[in-house]
Image (cartoon, rainbow, N blue to C red; front, side):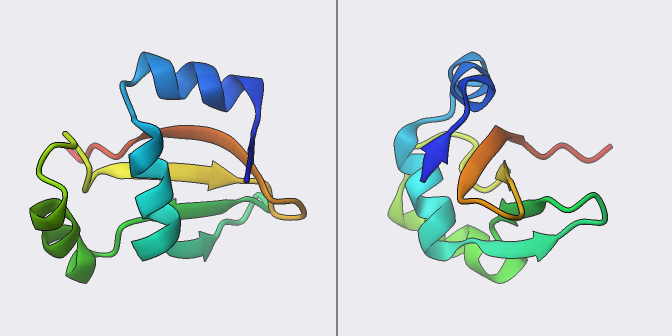
Length: 83
C-alpha cells in the first residue's frame, strides 16, 4: 500500500506506528464515503481483541486511515475522537 507524502507527515505528527497501519489492514473494516474515498477503522467487536494482543501500541483502537477509492493509496492517517 502506497502512502502519500501527506499521510506520512500526518502519521509521524500523530504518533501512529507502521504496525498500527498494518493491523488496520489485517483487522479493520472498510466503508465507502460519499466523497469517493474509503475509511479503514477497527470495528467495535475487534477493538478489545486487537488492543489486548498488542498492548505496546497506544491509541490503537481509535486509529483510522483514509484511502483513495480508485487506487490503493493512503491519503491520511489519524485517530478518531468523539465528543
